[in-house]
Length: 298
Image 1 (tube, helix red, strand yellow):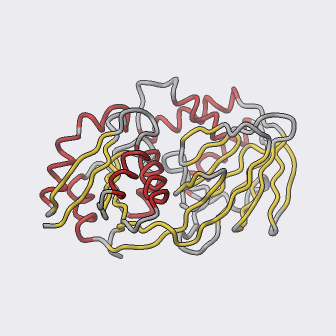
Image 2 (cartoon, rainbow, N blue to C red):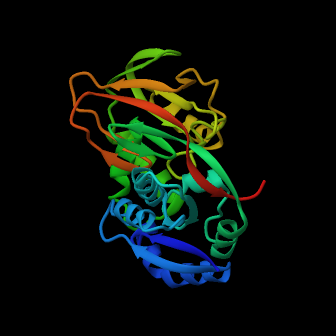
């Protein structure tokens, strides 16, 4: 019988991971696997669990959680530097990475079947400051959205992100961001800079709808400062990925770029996880075709 090591985040989806732990294990077993489960004990602990599993010989890791869980599992696997495949059972808040692999939210049996019968693809990853990311890195507006989400304990899923977006608009003041790449350079008061491997961020906002996780390039979305009326009008366009031609928006592709917030410490998110690297500048690089992922058969 095939083996699968489940990296389970009990806190994923605001506690859904804990509530669904047995159901997830049963679904993976029913799909034909001998299963071992490793639970994260604290935020970010998925990396340790995944690295230990790979170093002890597991070659299929199933990330049961959200984008942060996938982030931790991927970092553990890549740090172990041994071949292994990542499958996804999406039970988190955003689940943007799950969109790339075709894993459905709320259907454990189908997600488990993809783990069992899906196709392996090798995705690009991003890297900054010694840490990898699998879906996207953001600076600006979306980092404040994550803070606002922590203040909305009763909401889940896309409703949580949408409520946090509208609350953030009234709290957020764009500051100068300097973006430098061979393909584009810009400095000014930007709402956000999203550096993406995946097509969406924030639980379904299609900031980079044409992104290809295997092309060796980031898709970068820049949005300049806008007023309230335009903001309210633009949000549905970003949700559907039809914002490309809006005046405050620039989209381009690059394999390497630098982000700087002159005069203030830079704050960013990696796959929805807040990071404060302690300086004003970061460099971001694509690592082409680095992560093997189990995807729905096309």
